[in-house]
Length: 101
Image 1 (tube, rainbow, N blue to C red):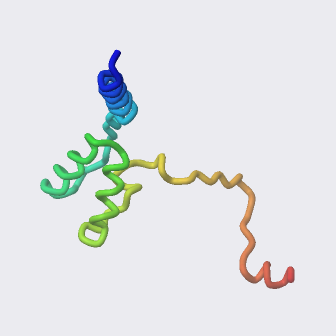
Image 2 (tube, rainbow, N blue to C red; image 1 turned 30 degrees about the horizontal axis):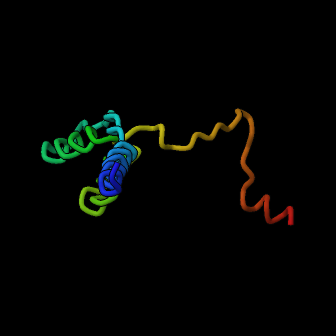
């Protein structure tokens, strides 16, 4: 093979490999709670939900000053940390902590 032919073949192979490596899977659609929202806002959130959870979260953060929506109320509870407090346990009050010192 001639060197120019090898170089062009190598270049095409590198492009094919780079395109395959750069291809990303489309994010899975996410379920959102849009009950009680105006139609224009509901449609916009549903559009973002088709692009995945990150798209919805970014949209809500970007428009929080306008719409004043919380991410947890739209996307779901799986983003919230869960804290289980056993029954019968009590949390110390500020006065209790001051006496202990």
